[in-house]
Length: 309
Image (cartoon, rainbow, N blue to C red; front, side, top):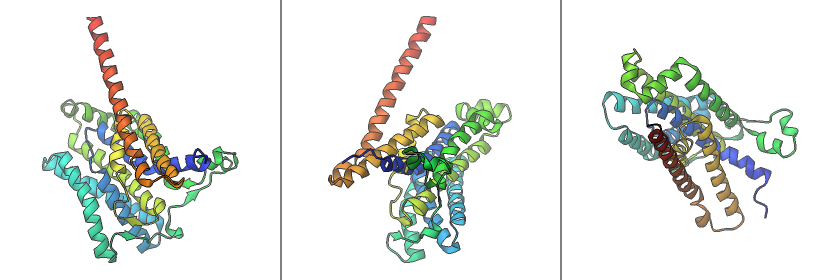
């Protein structure tokens, strides 16, 4: 059975979309000196309220906006505890993840009366797919690129907008300066607290969009632990991509490839227990390779510095 079909490559892009949203959130956060460990929990809660909002209002657009607002609010709450109350941001992010898992399940039972799933999203409430004119008629390429969700195209557009934000705007300069040296940034009049709040807030909105994609397109409803570690995989993608938008996007696509491969191999009849670890194995191997390359670069840098002396 041929695994590498156009449907397979189409699924790579589809699967990578929520990872890419969370990865961009991690990239912006890291540039601003904020390690947003809570992406997983933010995506879970946003996925829940996005699907509920779409169901109640009968509008996928309002559901998407609600998911983004929920992501923003959760991120700002996380920022309040970390920046104002001076709690450890790693512990704060862990708490957000626990709330996103157990808290979302509790809310599902309270709001809907269902145990662990809400199959509320119908075709009319699904985030729409877009067939790109002209491209959709190109053999092979059209079947891979065209027909994805609106959010998929937006995710890849946001990669370039993130580059513009970080490297072409005064706000991006402030974000990077705060991330590199907050004391120096503060000494020239940059509000470190304001920039960090903006950074984590933007990340929350992006993670909210990733959550909305999961419940309003990918799975057509909310279910327990549906995010399935994508928030943590995004952190790995950000690290593997060197903290840069393009590199992190490519890393997200690698993880999308790994998950798509696992699904495809499982569909051939292979025991699902054997293929389920594939995405996590790829994550570990990729991070090891990244760490080895980083150490090699550091050695070369130190060698060059020693020769100059």
